Length: 200
Image (cartoon, rainbow, N blue to C red):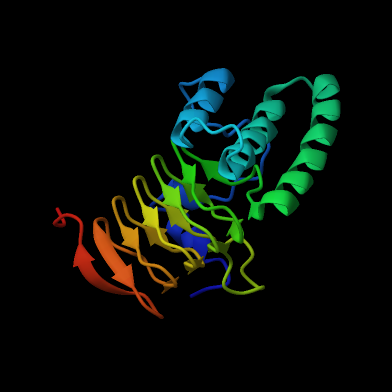
């Protein structure tokens, strides 16, 4: 691995380009109210779901970036206060710079450090999960989580790795290499132990 592995990966997959938080990076093609309603349904219509509230403030953090600067300033203060409160009260750390798709479910809250480059649509993430860097000299080498991925409890995914669509990451796995679409992986380090579908 190089010091800036994301640059190599981004040449083939733009999802590895770091999100800097300058534009509104909420999913395109859906308004803020509809997106929040969709997140609410994804969390079993439970107003008290910690995952729903973590996503709500994540969406809000992105939405405010589309406002004129004068309106954005008070919304930024509100976002920063609520981001800290939600991350400490729910145990879910999800900065607005992480690009998050639609119908993501943060299940069984607590111990979630979700600093990925990209989290796709229809992803389920369970408690005690860490997405992030593998080394302090590669601060932008962060994972990309594809669509329809199931992440088990206690999973650690580190570095500029890609988790392919429809993959299942077994509980307590440590992932430092790409996971193929449709693979079921488990262990430390994670190894393929089955398939959800055959590769194309």
